[in-house]
Length: 207
Image (cartoon, rainbow, N blue to C red; front, side):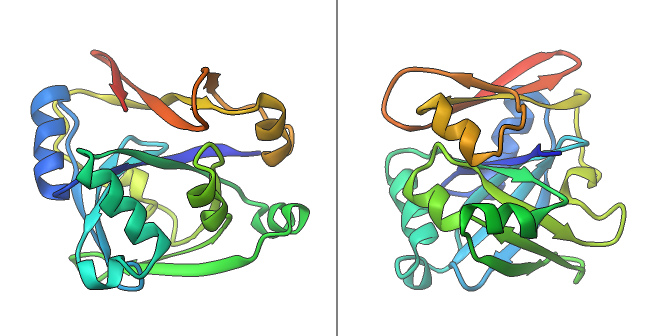
């Protein structure tokens, strides 16, 4: 079974973006870590079952040499916005085989020194066509998924309620193998348009 794991929001400064989300919506965040291979760093807004990733640039010279880094830079130059979305699966290898995707390993070191590892597939496909989610399987001990981190929330988060995507619905359904996910279709250029975050105080919409 697939599930939305996180949505990725490109921002100029992850720390400042975390403060804005707390001030505006009552959602706290925690420090993430650095992705040395991409020249990026992140901050996490944990929502219990899923999370928001606030991603920014750590090393511009490295970032400009990678597709992910260039996408973040481009969005930040336009004021930031949703870069993409990620779906969690316990069957990553079979999913990747069905779609002809390579499986890659990744990791980042948290400020406390804890290493978080994962395996993923389809990141390049998402960057090329942002309506597609990429797939992830976390290689961490129970309780260390980023969604479960303790954050100074002022409201109770209930998780990602939906994502709004502009694309061919048939192609998306084929990409995710016919699984049901809370996706709302909308007209326009292909891509992820917005995401709804449910909280006890109401819904927060990111775009």
